[in-house]
Image 1 (cartoon, rainbow, N blue to C red):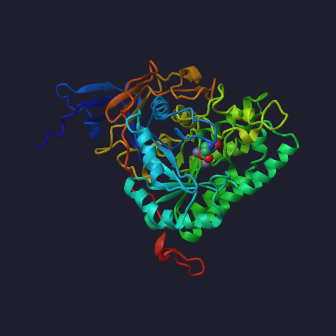
Image 2: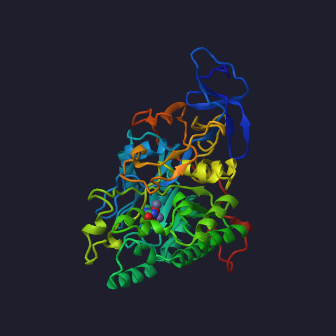
Image 3: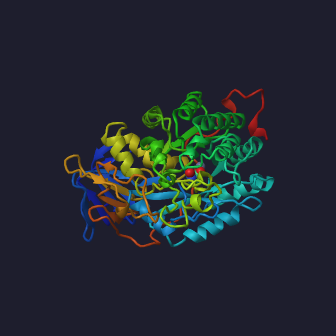
Length: 502
Ligand code: URP
Ligand code: ZN
Ligand code: ZN
């Protein structure tokens, strides 16, 4: 029998924080996997010991919504798999899930395989994919969803907006029915496409083309209406659904209401909706383009409060970054709002600005600081939002998202209450590839002191140094979600329509 105390790494003198509880104990690791939690573990010869210095040890972050190497029209992603995942580990994220995109008229699997080749051997952290479905043909729904599951891609994202991606309600039903049948989770970008297009065209005609009018064209009711519609579609099919990047209180409440009714509905929000407001888009000239994302940042303070309420009360299952990196200072990204500017307005054309803001490098420290250290959420809730729930929803638990025997040795060591050090966020200290951060000059009360991926120190927060090489990350072949799925035959069917029979 192998020696259960044959560790090659021990973490001492910290408090292990899981979603369920926290314990002052050592962590014993062998071959990148946690093998033991216990007091005063024996140190075998040659075993490395890391002193957590009385700090908090949380599971490595799981950022389950990032866009890496994904262009938008002519605009080029500012992050490839190396720079994007470098930013991830420098902010305490040890696993990311990014998007392989089905181009309309093409098949899904070749896009996933090409995306796999793009990432293979290039990443600093572990990674997996969702598939964006822009064309849910019978072949996709009947065959390719099953192939995705076999490949380890057990979630799809669909859009209710963007001309080249938007699905109509009938297509949404098709994909929800297929996902239900094959066990996938459906992620939905909920905004009403026609209202946005109609308003945006008229705003441009009136000369209102500055970046801030991106927000004017996407009022809250655009998100609210699409969210309610998506929820109705999910209910018809009895399919699990995650509403992604929720920005405002109305959509948050709609999700809460569906959850209260027992539907398998999940919610995702992002640090920018909890911490930034539409003022960022009103910066002079073209500067507001840095914060053009969809749904847009909101101006009403009650929206931020509603997002924090949803983070605290369990409405939101996950907090992701929705990292969508487009450079501001060169001609490859945000500047398309000036280059493809058919208006006479020198402040640009909001319709040509690629959507999205960076956040992979800052997600966990922002939630730890503004959530836990400012008393808005508990440490347990932090772990749920930052790691565990994403690992469960996307079929990676308990390999990821927890610190227990058998799980990967992915940890973030935060400083103790006594030794905590605040940091001012500066672009010059970021490791992502994009050329700005929307959080410039914001203060966080702590930053990860050490980040460990499968037993290897990959980021040293004292020196802000990346410690591993590209290729240190592994592809994760995911299983099906372990969170509640379709309610099945126990439910009251809608007019006796039984979706499991289709
Ligand atoms: O503005 C955003 N969120 N850009 C990224 C694409 C998406 O819809 O998530
Ligand atoms: Zn989206
Ligand atoms: Zn996104």
